[in-house]
Image (cartoon, rainbow, N blue to C red):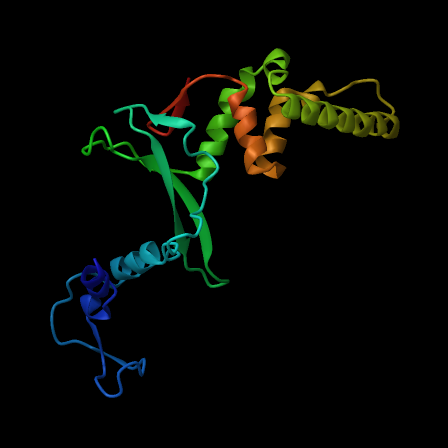
Length: 210
C-alpha cells in the first residue's frame, strides 16, 4: 500500500519529474515521454488522497453522524462513510460521503452520496413524522416544544409589526424543526430525531426509503 501511494503521488505520472539535485528542491521539468495520466486527472487523484491519516492505536476514530442508521437498498450491507479533503484557493475543506460497505456483495455498485444530500433525504422522509412519534423521545420532544415556543414568540412579534392576523404555521411545523435540528443540532439530536420514526432505512440510488 505504501508503494502504491508513493507511485500515485509521483508527479512523474503527469509528465513532470523533480530535478535530482537537490531532492525536495521543488524544481520540476517536463519529461520527454508520453504522460501516463493527464495533469487534470493527477490533480484530482491528489485531492482524493488528501485525507487525514488513520488514527493511531488507542485513539478514537471519527464518528460520522449517520452511520449505523442505514442499510444498502441493493445488497443489504451497512452504510459507512469517509471524508475527502478538497484543495481550494482559500484552503482545504472536508466533505463527508456515504456509501455501501459491500460486506454482503463486493460487486455492489450503489453510488456515493454526500452528507449534504443525505440530510436533504432525511428531511424529506421526516415530513411524515407526527407529534406522537416525537413524544417517544423525551429529549427531542422537549427540544421541539422549546423550538415551537420560540417560533411562536417570533411570529407574534412579526404579526404585530406587520399588523396582520395571518399566522404562517409552516414556520413551527415538524419539517421546520427537522431542518433546524439538522442545521444546528448535535450529532446525538440528529440521530435521536431520525430514531423517532422507529424504522429501518434503506439507501438506494441516493434515495432513502423506510
